[in-house]
Image (tube, rainbow, N blue to C red; front, side):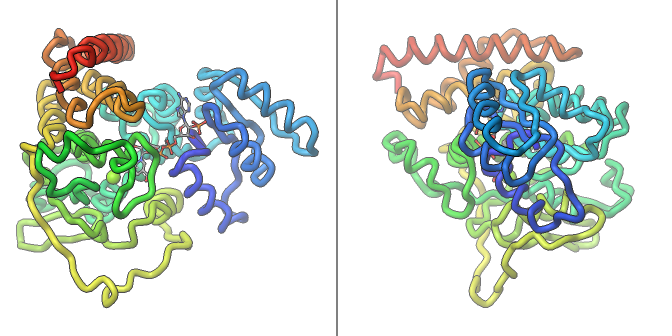
Length: 393
Ligand code: NDP
Ligand code: MG
């Protein structure tokens, strides 16, 4: 469990809790949340607990010493990689947020695990490299992102990446539209971090909540879909569906549209990924269509929310551009959450980074990590400079 203390981590542990005969936790990992990880370790008693922050690891070790639990506490980012590829591990839930998830998720793919992919950023940053690692490592890659999980469920079982062979016309990638759906550009300038993280349907970590509000989440998901399902952006249509009940669809050449529906509760895709091809109880309430009454659809407003197009541009450019997009977004979102920049400065900063970057092929992990590092420095400097001239925003 990479990222055990986060929103996906907690939901995953809830599914595991319901199936003690079926699953055993080998390792739980977090960055700094000692209190949360401590309680999770007491309950699940994994062989290892990893904290990337050394002080946090020391504190956890000390607290566990006073208990009967025999879990070994490891510290540092290398330990994430070690537990992700350990021999006794069958499946790895990749639920660290952001670029920090790349190395351990990649390690799990190389080691041929079942990789339950929530950490979409690793696929955005390193798509071709990651997909190659999955193939060469003999890993099973199962999408946990609700939309991609729905697409996976709506594609033919034998699907290997050829739309024509299966009569597939396009993927319909649904989006809730986020908390600011229908807002004008002027209204967006005034929105606060508290408003941005208050998602209408989903309860998620702060970073992905802001991504949902800017539509960058849908941009990252567009890239994620292209790599996972071996298709082009033109074959993926974004459909805003405010109720978040249809989690995505596949449209076929005979006019059929196959959709997956369910409550907006991540335990459904998590349980599906963990048990596939079987299905297990996820603790999710039945969908009540009478209570729901309506399903609505509209086109995304790509002008007011430019992040969707920025992501499509980054994918089209390829090479190091998607890693730059991702890193610039992480820094801009951090600055917005810290109330240093306005909401509308997020896409402006990302665009600036993409324009300033010198395109490079992303043949190796080093190329990608260097582009990530460059974009973080560039965006920090750019925002510090732009913030001093406040009227820029
Ligand atoms: P959270 O912010 O809730 O949790 C993030 C987890 O990652 C925490 O366990 C955190 O530990 C850990 N973490 C953060 N930084 C680091 C780091 N530098 N090194 C190691 N571990 C770190 O995020 P979510 O659960 O919302 O999202 C996780 C991933 O899943 C993201 O990639 C997101 O896009 C994706 N996803 C999430 C969905 C959701 O519903 N939440 C839906 C679809 C995809 P600590 O608590 O110690 O900080
Ligand atoms: Mg999603």
